[in-house]
Length: 159
Image (cartoon, rainbow, N blue to C red; front, top):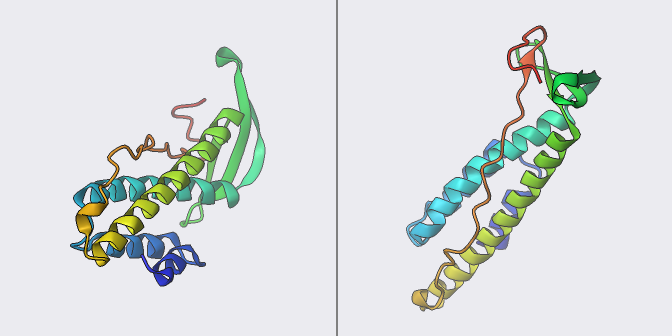
Protein backbone atom coordinates (compact mmCIF):
# COMPACT_ATOMS: atom_id res chain seq x y z
CA UNK A 1 0.00 0.00 0.00
CA UNK A 2 1.41 3.36 -0.95
CA UNK A 3 1.28 6.43 1.24
CA UNK A 4 -1.40 7.74 -1.14
CA UNK A 5 -3.51 4.62 -0.53
CA UNK A 6 -3.19 4.99 3.23
CA UNK A 7 -4.08 8.68 3.05
CA UNK A 8 -7.12 7.80 0.94
CA UNK A 9 -8.35 5.41 3.62
CA UNK A 10 -7.89 7.79 6.54
CA UNK A 11 -8.72 11.25 5.22
CA UNK A 12 -12.20 12.66 5.68
CA UNK A 13 -14.22 10.33 3.52
CA UNK A 14 -17.59 8.72 3.92
CA UNK A 15 -17.33 5.13 5.09
CA UNK A 16 -18.82 3.68 1.91
CA UNK A 17 -16.14 5.45 -0.20
CA UNK A 18 -13.46 4.23 2.20
CA UNK A 19 -14.72 0.64 1.96
CA UNK A 20 -14.91 0.86 -1.83
CA UNK A 21 -11.24 1.91 -1.98
CA UNK A 22 -10.36 -0.81 0.51
CA UNK A 23 -12.03 -3.39 -1.78
CA UNK A 24 -10.07 -2.08 -4.77
CA UNK A 25 -6.79 -2.42 -2.88
CA UNK A 26 -7.49 -5.96 -1.76
CA UNK A 27 -8.97 -7.33 -4.99
CA UNK A 28 -5.64 -7.20 -6.78
CA UNK A 29 -4.20 -10.44 -8.19
CA UNK A 30 -0.97 -10.07 -6.17
CA UNK A 31 -2.81 -10.21 -2.83
CA UNK A 32 -2.54 -13.58 -1.08
CA UNK A 33 -5.85 -15.45 -0.79
CA UNK A 34 -5.60 -15.48 3.01
CA UNK A 35 -5.80 -11.69 3.01
CA UNK A 36 -8.93 -11.71 0.87
CA UNK A 37 -10.80 -13.68 3.54
CA UNK A 38 -9.46 -11.45 6.30
CA UNK A 39 -10.34 -8.37 4.25
CA UNK A 40 -13.92 -9.52 3.82
CA UNK A 41 -14.21 -10.12 7.58
CA UNK A 42 -12.70 -6.71 8.33
CA UNK A 43 -14.94 -4.87 5.84
CA UNK A 44 -18.11 -6.43 7.26
CA UNK A 45 -17.13 -5.72 10.87
CA UNK A 46 -15.89 -2.22 10.03
CA UNK A 47 -19.31 -1.33 8.60
CA UNK A 48 -21.08 -2.48 11.79
CA UNK A 49 -18.59 -0.60 13.99
CA UNK A 50 -18.91 2.57 11.89
CA UNK A 51 -22.71 2.37 11.93
CA UNK A 52 -22.73 1.89 15.72
CA UNK A 53 -20.32 4.77 16.25
CA UNK A 54 -22.26 7.10 13.97
CA UNK A 55 -25.58 6.15 15.53
CA UNK A 56 -24.30 6.90 19.02
CA UNK A 57 -22.59 10.14 18.03
CA UNK A 58 -25.61 11.45 16.12
CA UNK A 59 -28.21 10.50 18.71
CA UNK A 60 -29.41 12.29 21.80
CA UNK A 61 -30.33 11.31 25.33
CA UNK A 62 -34.03 10.49 25.56
CA UNK A 63 -34.40 9.34 29.15
CA UNK A 64 -33.59 6.33 31.27
CA UNK A 65 -35.05 2.86 31.47
CA UNK A 66 -35.16 0.27 34.23
CA UNK A 67 -35.97 -3.39 33.82
CA UNK A 68 -36.46 -4.59 37.39
CA UNK A 69 -37.11 -8.18 36.32
CA UNK A 70 -33.64 -8.39 34.77
CA UNK A 71 -32.05 -6.06 37.34
CA UNK A 72 -30.70 -3.78 34.66
CA UNK A 73 -31.16 -0.30 33.36
CA UNK A 74 -29.59 2.28 31.16
CA UNK A 75 -30.34 5.18 28.88
CA UNK A 76 -32.47 5.54 25.79
CA UNK A 77 -30.80 7.06 22.75
CA UNK A 78 -32.97 8.76 20.13
CA UNK A 79 -32.37 9.81 16.55
CA UNK A 80 -34.33 10.27 13.38
CA UNK A 81 -34.30 7.85 10.46
CA UNK A 82 -33.75 9.12 6.93
CA UNK A 83 -37.53 9.07 6.49
CA UNK A 84 -37.91 11.42 9.48
CA UNK A 85 -39.26 8.87 11.94
CA UNK A 86 -37.94 8.99 15.50
CA UNK A 87 -36.18 5.76 16.44
CA UNK A 88 -34.93 4.70 19.85
CA UNK A 89 -32.21 2.45 21.18
CA UNK A 90 -32.09 1.47 24.85
CA UNK A 91 -28.48 0.85 25.90
CA UNK A 92 -26.78 -0.16 29.10
CA UNK A 93 -23.29 0.83 30.16
CA UNK A 94 -22.26 -2.71 29.20
CA UNK A 95 -23.66 -2.19 25.68
CA UNK A 96 -21.65 1.01 25.25
CA UNK A 97 -18.52 -0.68 26.61
CA UNK A 98 -19.03 -3.57 24.15
CA UNK A 99 -19.38 -1.18 21.21
CA UNK A 100 -16.17 0.63 22.25
CA UNK A 101 -14.30 -2.68 22.67
CA UNK A 102 -15.50 -3.94 19.27
CA UNK A 103 -14.33 -0.73 17.59
CA UNK A 104 -10.94 -1.09 19.29
CA UNK A 105 -10.65 -4.78 18.37
CA UNK A 106 -11.47 -4.09 14.72
CA UNK A 107 -9.03 -1.16 14.64
CA UNK A 108 -6.21 -3.41 15.89
CA UNK A 109 -7.26 -6.14 13.46
CA UNK A 110 -7.21 -3.62 10.59
CA UNK A 111 -3.75 -2.37 11.58
CA UNK A 112 -2.38 -5.93 11.69
CA UNK A 113 -3.96 -6.77 8.36
CA UNK A 114 -2.59 -3.61 6.71
CA UNK A 115 0.89 -4.20 8.15
CA UNK A 116 1.07 -7.81 6.99
CA UNK A 117 -0.30 -6.91 3.58
CA UNK A 118 2.26 -4.15 3.17
CA UNK A 119 5.12 -6.50 4.13
CA UNK A 120 3.86 -9.12 1.70
CA UNK A 121 3.60 -6.64 -1.17
CA UNK A 122 7.05 -5.18 -0.45
CA UNK A 123 8.59 -8.67 -0.60
CA UNK A 124 6.77 -9.37 -3.85
CA UNK A 125 7.93 -6.04 -5.34
CA UNK A 126 11.51 -6.87 -4.33
CA UNK A 127 11.27 -10.07 -6.36
CA UNK A 128 10.95 -12.42 -3.41
CA UNK A 129 7.23 -13.08 -2.97
CA UNK A 130 7.75 -16.27 -0.95
CA UNK A 131 9.97 -14.51 1.63
CA UNK A 132 6.93 -13.33 3.52
CA UNK A 133 4.50 -15.97 4.64
CA UNK A 134 1.09 -14.60 5.61
CA UNK A 135 0.28 -15.05 9.26
CA UNK A 136 -2.77 -17.27 9.48
CA UNK A 137 -2.61 -16.47 13.17
CA UNK A 138 -4.01 -12.98 12.70
CA UNK A 139 -6.89 -13.18 15.09
CA UNK A 140 -10.21 -12.42 13.50
CA UNK A 141 -12.21 -10.68 16.19
CA UNK A 142 -15.80 -11.81 16.63
CA UNK A 143 -18.23 -9.97 14.38
CA UNK A 144 -19.56 -6.89 16.20
CA UNK A 145 -23.22 -6.65 17.16
CA UNK A 146 -25.26 -3.86 15.63
CA UNK A 147 -27.22 -1.67 17.99
CA UNK A 148 -30.96 -2.20 17.60
CA UNK A 149 -33.00 0.90 16.79
CA UNK A 150 -36.80 0.75 16.85
CA UNK A 151 -39.55 3.25 16.14
CA UNK A 152 -41.17 4.93 19.09
CA UNK A 153 -43.98 2.68 20.33
CA UNK A 154 -42.44 -0.56 19.03
CA UNK A 155 -42.02 -2.58 22.21
CA UNK A 156 -40.93 -5.82 20.54
CA UNK A 157 -37.86 -7.17 22.28
CA UNK A 158 -38.12 -4.75 25.19
CA UNK A 159 -35.05 -4.73 27.40
